[in-house]
Length: 175
Ligand SMILES: CC(C)(COP(=O)(O)OP(=O)(O)OC[C@H]1O[C@@H](n2cnc3c(N)ncnc32)[C@H](O)[C@@H]1OP(=O)(O)O)[C@@H](O)C(=O)NCCC(=O)NCCS
Image (cartoon, rainbow, N blue to C red; front, side, top):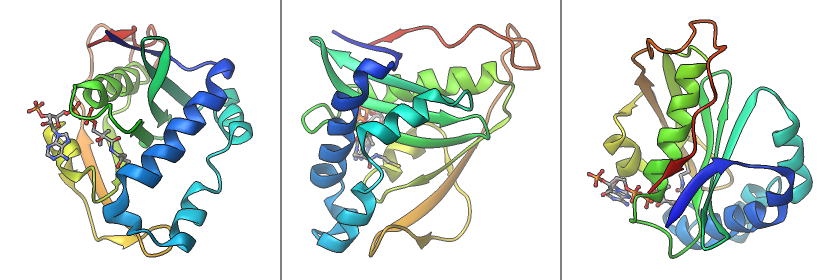
């Protein structure tokens, strides 16, 4: 069974490893094996940076855990941007990405956000479209030779949550 929970500082190394492996092995359509692109993309995916992301109240970060191993990472910024949604190689197409997304969307609603934005890899476009995102603007340069595909989704406010964002954080999700 896989559970999605809030990330904590003890996850820094494992979560960073997942991010780096996911980018390197699962985003080949984006970086096409280009070393310069990979170098730029991976440069900020370090345990130290992960700890600084966790330390900010503007970030809501979750990990998916299976058999006590971190197999996925998601991060939502309070400004309404999903900044990370990455699985470890081998963890795809089992509903784990969706469970991470649901946790992020619940937190977005708890914060009173009306719109979610993200810049998708080529690899994840169909996944986000399945989650209700629509293409939102022109494709822009990403790291090196990769491209960012902007997406947006309008959220229905959760009536149980306080409109100023004081609601309970998204509960742990299981898949
Ligand atoms: C994108 C990613 C997070 C998706 O997670 P996942 O666990 O594989 O996706 P899920 O199994 O939860 O699938 C959810 C839905 O999306 C669909 N989907 C997922 N990946 C898909 C793909 N590559 N092509 C078409 N549909 C896809 C599933 O069929 C499913 O549809 P359903 O709800 O109708 O059954 C994962 O593949 C990943 O980590 N990719 C590499 C990293 C990446 O590019 N991240 C995005 C950064 S912006």
